[in-house]
Image 1 (cartoon, rainbow, N blue to C red):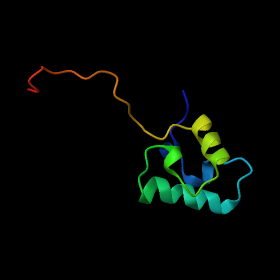
Image 2 (cartoon, rainbow, N blue to C red):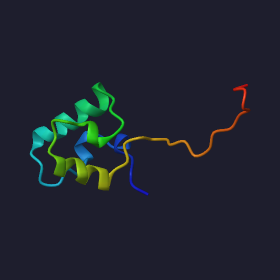
Image 3 (cartoon, one colour):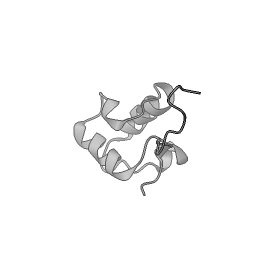
Length: 73
């Protein structure tokens, strides 16, 4: 299980060899724009987005089972 990106302060994020300003860009996407996937971070290089997706989860919860009746009650 990968760590959740939001559980760590931006200073602790492992961005590999990326320049320091990339950390600010990721923080803006996560906290200001509230993206739910690394692929949505369009101003980051594709390689960095792939690395982030390998290292971290971005969505804290995922639906495992939906319960309820057919008539939505």
